[in-house]
Image (cartoon, chains in turn red, cyan, blue, brown):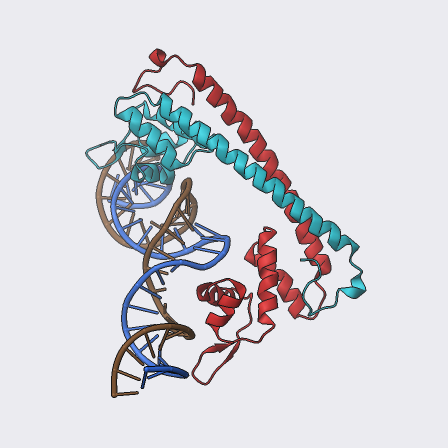
Length: 129
Length: 129
DNA sequence: CTGAGGCTTCCCCTATAGGGGAAGGTCAAG
DNA sequence: CTTGACCTTCCCCTATAGGGGAAGCCTCAG
């Protein structure tokens, strides 16, 4: 299957597929005599895996790690579980940070609402930021 | 005051200061006969404003908007309040997205924990991602 | 006078995940 | 035979907020 067909079958683009190859997520496929990439059918499943991993918020680098383990003939279960755990911790950290930031911004916003326009002189340092 | 002194006084770097100038956050300062930047003392306050705005999660582009309004001789209060409100909405969106993602990843992780290692054969499509 | 810093401009580099487009080869249909 | 659609490689570009370093002046202390 040619690159355009694979792109259509997996809902991605030829650009992305070549990029995945360069990034080591897809092995270099066979070539037709004309030099066209000729993908095997199971590449569709591999791309499905990549896509699902991306929706879980894993980076291409992390997905590549998993695929490398699998391609080396090992079961990546343990590694995947560890990555997911790290990802969970990262998400929790991000949420906590955002909640804190939200409180800060909300306080600034509420304070801004109480500022008398008259006291908010132009060309001075802003009173509430 | 020279650029290195200003950087030290505001806890930033000369690189950042030149970058702010190019980005329109700082006006081009006077120059000494030798061509050195010669900042006025109130630039310290301006950088304090920039720094506080950054902690509130505003981008340099947004901070620049505020400063432009102020430099034009208008009070930026209204604009600032609007920006803060948009920022709040953005934060809320990010938090909601992260909570959803967290649930997805947690489900994957829990599922992974229940997978029998034996059924997780290498070189097959991963069973839980 | 000379060396150490500090200053100037200029250009490239970082990470992320590709997108845009040029120049040229290939293939199937009309 | 040619045209259009597809393929190839190659290089630059996106946004963010600067960082690294080179080559060349300036200035101050010893």
